[in-house]
Amino acid sequence: MSDGSVQKVQEAGYTDEQVVEMIANVALTTFSNYFNETIGTEVDIPAVEPVHT
Image (cartoon, rainbow, N blue to C red; front, side, top):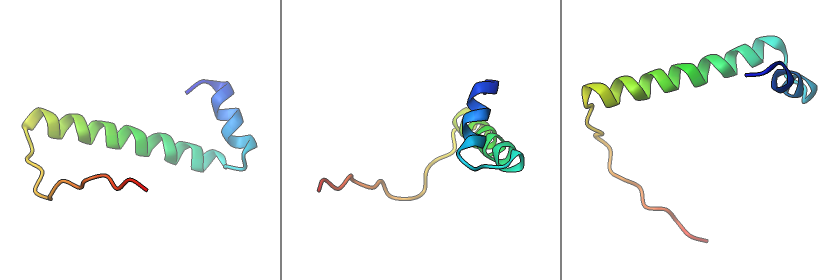
């Protein structure tokens, strides 16, 4: 994330701690997705069809 992006998020009212937490959550989710894709984890929940309104 660039300094300008961080500044815009802070100007929206988020604290430094919240920005770090957002970045950490994205990193964790990305790692988890790559890990599960690599080991071939099977999804054990039914697929959900989109609802058009």
